[in-house]
Structures are given as C-alpha cells and as structure tokens.
Amino acid sequence: MNAVGRAAAAAMLAALMAAAWSALFYAWHPALLLEFDRDLPRNVSGLYPVERDEPSRLTFAWTGEEAVLRLPALDRRVTWTLDLRMRGGRPAADNPDVAVVVDGVTISTHRALPDWSDVRVTIPARAERRGLTIGLRSSVTFVPGAADPRPLGVMLDRLLLAADGIVVIPRAALVATSVASAAMGAAIALLGVTAGSAIGGAVLLSAAAAAIVARGFGPFTDY
Image 1 (cartoon, rainbow, N blue to C red):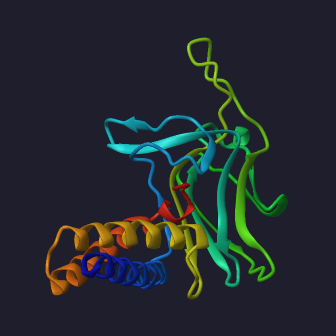
Image 2: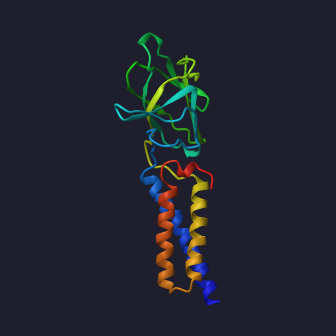
Image 3: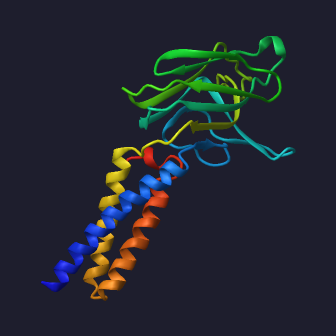
C-alpha cells in the first residue's frame, strides 16, 4: 500500500508540475518559426520539399498556388504578427501578388519581387475564436519546364508567427504532457526509490516533457 500511495502521489505531483511547466514554457516563447532547413511539419500544406542553393547555402521552399498553415486551438485573444521572407523568382512584370488569407478572409495582399523581400502582416485578435488558419495564395503560377512540371507560386525562406502578448497553451498539449508525466512519475515511484527521489524525478521529467511539447509546433501536434 505504501508503494501504491507513493506512486499515486508522484503521479499527481508530476501531472501538476507538467501543467505548470507547459504553461510557463509556452507563454515564455510561443513564436512559431519555419526556416525551411528541415522537413516541414504536418501543419503546413501546399509547399514543395525544401531545396538548397549551394553557392549561397540558402534553404527555401516553393509554394504551389496556395500554401496553408493550420494551427488548431491557437489562442486568439491577442494579435499575432506574421513575418515572411519571400521571393517571386522571375522578372518583375511576371511576379505574382500574394494574398494573405486568415480563416478564409483576405486581410492583405503583397507583390512578390524578383529578389528577397520581407513582408509583415498583423492578424487581428478574435477572442471568441480558437485556432488559426493562414493561407498564402499566389495570383499566378508558372511551370519551369518539361523536366519540372510543378506549378510554382513564390519562394519562402522564412515564416515567423509571433504573439503580441501572453498566450495560453492549447488544452490538448496541456493534457498530453500532464498524462505522460503522471505515468512516468508513477513508474519511478514503483521502482522502490525513496520518496525524495520519486518527487525529484517527477519534477525533472515533467519539466523535460513540457520543454519538448511546448516548443515550436509541438502544441499543435496530435499525441
């Protein structure tokens, strides 16, 4: 009975600590950054695989006609700022207009340039809504040739989405971190370690789990 009680206490402590750590880590750094130097998260669609320009060592990805970023349960009580570094990649007269579409509504349109340029868009707060869908819709596409039949929109080098205030982590990520930490805390206690060791292990494991889940696209991933 002592072992069971110790395991239950460790599980409860780990779950509570995981919830606190998750909220803290996410509020501290909720920004989402895509620099296109690795595989793309499943939250993004409409982008072709990452490419690399060897002379400049620059990594980027082409969009199709429309690229979409889906962030379920994102906190919309504050405004968010979208920063893009994009390039049309063709002569000035042939570069497309890129519409930024938020939840199905176009809120801004920008002309892509032959060279890299930075675009900043403010996404208004909508306290009554949870989650965010951002689309980048090119007015025209082009096909490079017979060897590359892809319809290409614009090139993206960086996408950054940052909150203009303190935000709350999505509930699904909070629950997942708490449950996982509780299971690990209970497992440590059942190994027969001392109560102090079980508590210390529960605290450390919950912090580690929260640091992983609360980072980048982690809070918007299924567990």
